Length: 250
Length: 195
Image 1 (cartoon, rainbow over the protein chains, first blue to last red):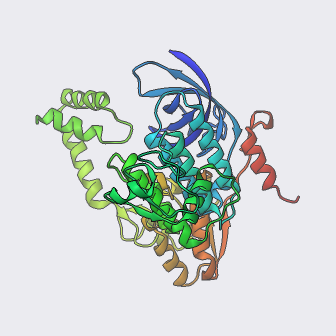
Image 2: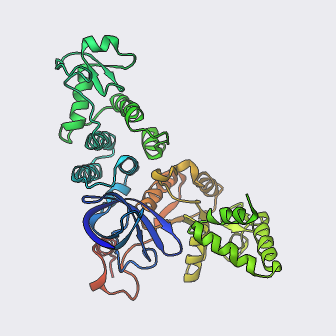
Image 3: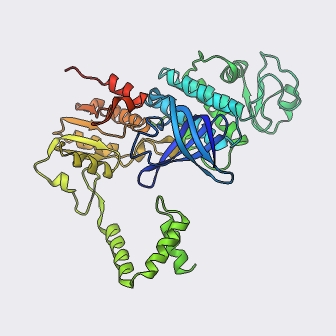
């Protein structure tokens, strides 16, 4: 078995047998991995407090080609993120980002995805209760972009013609983003996106973290994200954490 | 499907038991005298027929109320909220707590689709509203999910006129500071108390 030492973030954890835990990690050098942490529930000596949700550090994994489950030899924690559990908006938001990563991330090394997830959790952790929703939206779009599905916002998704910043455009999920006037006329379905909404989407994807959306805008952008995911990344199974975050049942 | 496949399939549905272990257990049972398998089947049937959640606290019991809720020596003014019935056993083994319990039946876990509606929170609020409760101790696990659950329950209890406390976190008794991890030390420091 090969030993892999890599940056890792805990995305999901559940108990296994009497004293072990199975973790799902996003790693810099091994993509999304499932690992067995033997004895993790009985003693914190080996893994410390590093195995809590959203904690980040260096994971030491024993891997074997063809196996679905690696063995966790150790986890040197670099930072925990208790702030994500201190507000339910932040908690459900971070869970939604973790779910997207787990569901659609692959096993290949992907430093960009790892950094996007790490930055996402940091941004959500420091977001106020009022801006956690916007921070989650931005984080989710950036993870989607790292997975290779960034929506087109400045050029037409069909013919790649540039789109004027002040134009109201058709946003076609099937075409992968905004459409120019000509392509928009022939698009079978889509949503009209006013210039300010398109500007907001661009900020969510590429801007800084200072943006805070009002309730109606946040709702509209949540809907846009949900529809986009359903078009491009859905495997038919419900995204439970994303639904809970969007429903705000707390 | 053969009887062997049938039992193997059922055993493999249990947590922590894979297909190989299930098959091994099945063959083990086949090697034993038939009475042993019948006793196991009878025990399973009795378990599912008799054991149910306590009508008051949702702890597992064979009566309408569990032994703790029926015990007149327990302090009904203090309720300790736990995630699962198994957590009650851990607290009882400490021998320090003399109040009653309330089992939530899990913890908030968006990734597992567990939302507030899936927990026994309305039943807890009803118990508090029915009067006589002075303090609610939130003893969910010291994990991020446990903290989020405690926070949610605390918010629900805010307007119900009851003191809400959270169990402490920090260094284990008999532990060595040198070997404690940074997260635990940080929590122990933030929860320090005056002497």
